[in-house]
Length: 125
Length: 272
Image 1 (cartoon, one colour):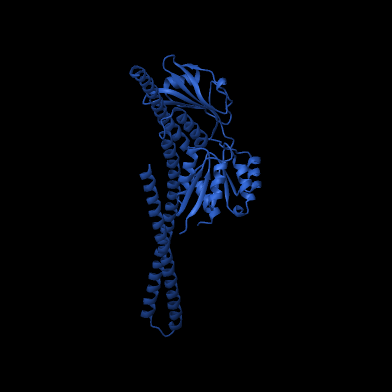
Image 2 (cartoon, each protein chain N blue to C red):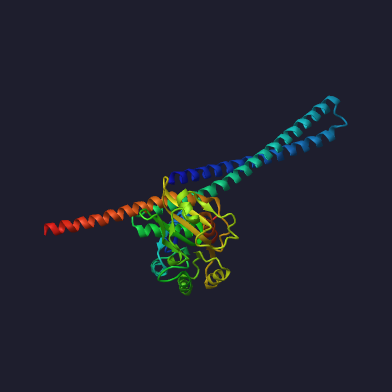
């Protein structure tokens, strides 16, 4: 089975480890981590990803800016983006989805929720 | 933790294998049932066709055979029902194991992160991350005890200004009592709780064995976090012990580093 490349953009190492831990249950997955939006963009420009998980509140560049920049890139338009954030208000969710996020998960998170969303968007049974 | 995780995965794999076997067995039983029904129908037709010319003995034998087949069919149906019940039990158990697996993952990562550094500031940052991301608190403070003065002071906080959190004396108020007793406090009704800096909704002592070094006080949860789950209480228990040892270790390390640096300075002065 071909590798599934997933990028995690999150400033908290604890969260990166938790998301990575959940996603590693998918066979053939390869995880790349970035600590903020700019770092994430650098990694996106260097290689192709099958899915991106991003936080919203991050230093240097936030997740919403990252989503809009990724969606402006013709090569990245189709890549599924999942937001994982503490922001639970409905308007935050709407804003992220309007910018092009495919799903929105609020913290605190459970690993199985991340896994379910990833499998659904990657169309893995 | 990794072994437990691997064990759980192994158990989940075993369950899936058992589930598949159960499904195959059910299909075989249904096929057998279908075949027997067909045979029964054939025999009934044959019996009807030969009823007139067949003798009584033959009819009697056929009727017995029909009874046997009916009994066999009933047995198969009972077994199918039993297998379906077992499948349901397996499915329920699988869900329970998955939930347990998720909880263990959270606890493992929290514990791993807490002991990943000896830098005091980093340890505080990790505790904050755990409380925000894994427990779902929006406003809280981390207070440490000054052993000499017996006063608790906030060393880190989220959603609050440190200046707004007054120092607390050992045994004074809810926070001071938690420090003294070493027992966690949880407000009876989280939904109706009104923020009071001196009476948090949750107060968890940070302790090494029975020695309490500080307190985690939570005042508000994230809007989407309505109540505590079982794993939250386990995280609080983990924080009570592991956060305390991580803080204590980091403090010891920074003290020894500082002393080493001072001694090195003296040595340099003497040898120059």
